[in-house]
Each structure stands twice: as C-alpha cells, then as structure tokens.
Amino acid sequence: MKELFTIGDLSKLFQVKISTLRYYDDIGLLKPEYVDEKNNYRYYSTQHFERLSTIKYLRTLGLPINDLLEFFDYRDTDRLIEMLKKQQIEVANKIRELELVDKKIKRRLDQIDDAINKPLGTIAEVKLPKLRVAHLIHEYRPDEDIEYPIAELRKNFNIEGSIFLGKIGISVALQDIQSNKFDRYNSIFMILEEGDIIPKAVTIPSREYLRVRFRGTHANAFLFYEKLLLYSREHHYNILDDSIEVTLIDYGITNSVEKYVTEILLPFSR
Image 1 (tube, one colour):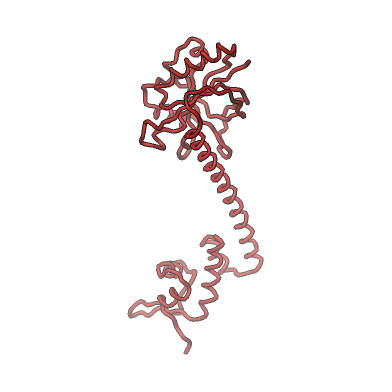
Image 2 (cartoon, helix red, strand yellow):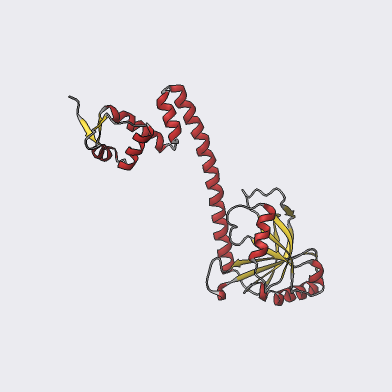
C-alpha cells in the first residue's frame, strides 16, 4: 500500500498553507488521493509531490491560477513556453512601472531635501527645464479652501488616484502682478512627471525665473511678490507670464505650520 500524507503533512513538507491546499483542491488544481468520508480528511500520495513542486515554481514566477489550470489540463512544452513568454512581458511591464515609481520617490526626496536646506527669503535667478502641467483656469483666494479647485482639476483632466504631494500649484495672473494685486489667483495646476499621461496637458517652455522661498503658505505670499517685483525693477527685468506658486512642504507632510515652505517663481527676461 502506498504511503499517504495528510494535508498537514503536505503543508509542512512544502511550506504551503493548509488553506492554500484546500483552495487548490476546491478549484481542481491539486486534488487529493482520496478524502475520508467519515471525517473529510484529505490524503495525498508522493505522486502529488511533483505537481505541487511545479505549482509552487510557476506561482513563484507570478503565473496566475487560471494559466496553471489550463497548463495542467493540456500539459505541453509549447504551452509552457507560451505561458512563460507572456509572463516575461508582464514582468518587464511591472519593472518599468516600479522604475517610474522609484524615480518619483527620488525626485520627491530631493525636493523635500532642497526645500529644507535652501536659504529662505532670498531671491535667486534660476533657469528651469520645460514643465508639463494640467492647467485649469479657476479663480481662488488665499482664504478659501483649496480642496474644491483641486477636485475640479481632477474632474476636468480625469486624474485618477491620489495627487502626489508637492505637485499642486496656483498662479497669479500677469496683469495682477503688474498691478500689484496679490489677493487672488487665476488658475490651479498640477505639475506632471514622467509616467503621468494627461492628454490635455500644457507645456511651459524652459525659462529663467526669479525664485523666492519662504516659511508659510499662500496666505503669506503677497509680501514676497512685492519683494520679487522690487527686485525685478531694480534689475530692469520684465515679468513675462503668470506666476508659479507651489507649497513644497505643507499639511500633507507635517503638522507643524512653522515648517511649511512655499515657493514663488516669476518668469522674466533681461
């Protein structure tokens, strides 16, 4: 009589959960040798060892259960090659997705480090590469809740999932800047990164900017707009377009308002 093994024995031998073995039985992937009708105990033979080893191996490679069921129904070398090539493509796609996530994490860490360690309150002249943005004309005032215009931005551009911290900005219109009016914003935007696919995105060309960072939020920004304008007049610079204003560190990162950092960029020509 062949040696039989309980489901517990098989679980220990192959380090597979008993619940998983029961599931394999239920779906027909690994049926026991027989089931004791008195106590409903499952018993397996050594003939199941190779099949379970193959199942474990293919599951380690990430093959879905449905593919395994089909493979064991029509076990064949050509079918296995087809399955593995298909899975290879899936893995390559996942690697690309994870590489994009890794780049986003690195960029965000760099942004936070830069926001923490760069001098605050001083004006710098910087040249930035082109930016891709999802841009929505939407009037907003500093004392209003910004979550509503963010929701409108999501809806307008069909943005799914959570918006990454540090990517939402608002703009003061050029005519308001020239008139020294900083009590309202004319638009809200999301800065896009590699992998963000937004069909109606707008590209802002590479430009020179006057940049200032300060401790605080949009409510404190008007003081620094005035400082930027004074600097531009002293150096005979022309402001070219709407501002770019982004909170680099805010409530999404810290509960401490004293640690908030906001950045204002004004595009200029000499």
